[in-house]
Image (cartoon, rainbow, N blue to C red; front, side, top):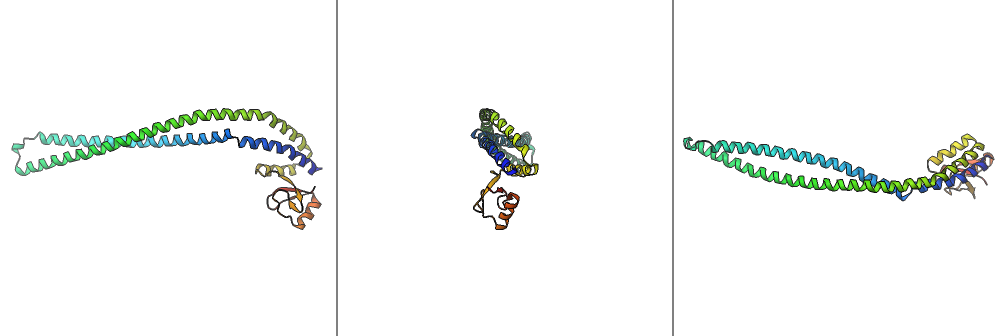
Length: 232
């Protein structure tokens, strides 16, 4: 009687399992997961780009500070009365001035390169921002469609759960728990018949000693796939 009730239980549960499977494998749900991943990736990328932009801005600011110092030194040199300097001091002042001018050229090139990098980062940031926005808008559409699928399936799911609740009253709690464990592990069908001394689930041959146990106890757990075998 226990096995007969459990077989009937599984017949109803198989309908519930299929409905749940359809919802799990729903194209709308999968699309939501993909768009959610895109949005998350875009957000992380935006944060990284913001950090890069901040670092570039600091580097540019430092370059400007160094350039200002060089310009100030050049101004000081040009402000000196060169006629009062000795030949050695004049050579030293002009040499320093030339070096500072070269430094300004190098700093200008670095600043230009950093500005180009900043523009590239900004363009990528804007692109990422658009991707995030688009993913969010599309996610909303697919989420609404998936929620509609769940809403449409809910009456049938609730009906099947009520049927299961009635049947399970006539099944041993321990046996029902063994069934539930496998169901949670996505092993389905849980209950399978013995077919020509083979498991009806994985088709592995059942040893003679296990067949004898099955005949005595009415059920047997398959050593290979963990399904519960019963004899018709």
